[in-house]
Image 1 (tube, rainbow, N blue to C red):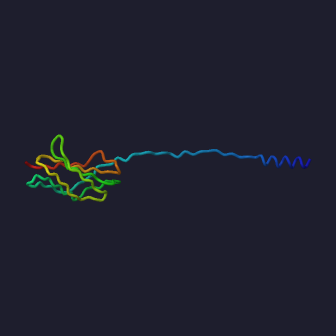
Image 2: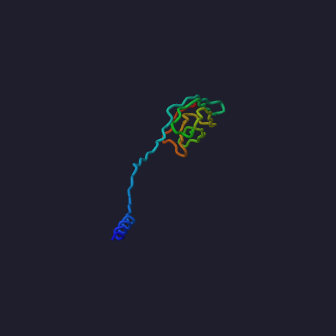
Image 3: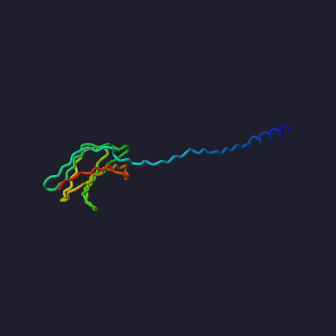
Length: 131
């Protein structure tokens, strides 16, 4: 009988199993970064007798997280030709020129880039070239 009780006791402990299941969900937050336009731009511009518009940028407000900038100088008109220049993230001075016979309001745009994305709204300045 003692063997039977001992065998039952050992068999009972050998068959005991435990199983645990569970899970946890972490909150997920997804957001977007709206690339803002630069808030300031300083410099000078001039036109020479060969009809070349020259713009010297002496500084502009850097945009948080920007990896670069695009500077565009466009001629007046409904379908304007333009000169485009790519700037690095740390570059805040440059010179951009546009040779043309047109007079009137030229448009200078500064757009921030983050990787391959660009800001929706550039910082825009109108530069008037007299006739």
